[in-house]
Image 1 (cartoon, one colour):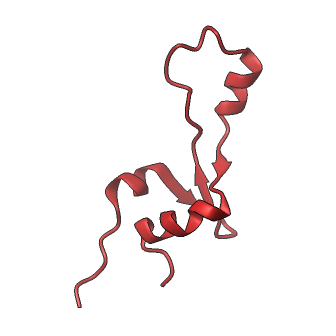
Image 2 (cartoon, helix red, strand yellow; image 1 turned 120 degrees about the vertical axis):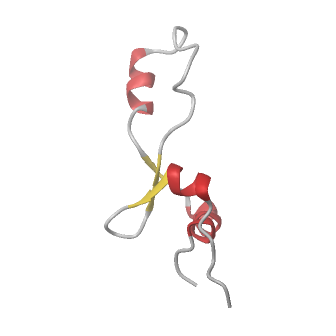
Image 3 (cartoon, one colour; image 1 turned 90 degrees about the vertical axis):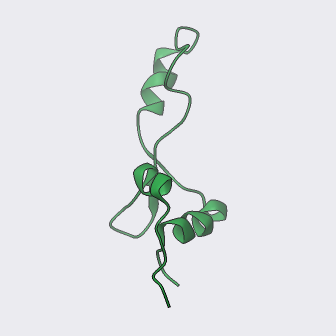
Length: 66
């Protein structure tokens, strides 16, 4: 059987934490930031954890697990 290919866009967007959770960056931080509060922009700079509902799809794209 051929090997599974990792999704190239997913490997650029997601990374694993030490405990096996999937880390992601937040959206809405690229342009038209004048209407957004400073507190909101600062919070969007921090990484988030992928939700449990989406983690299965992301793991499949990253070829993690079975």
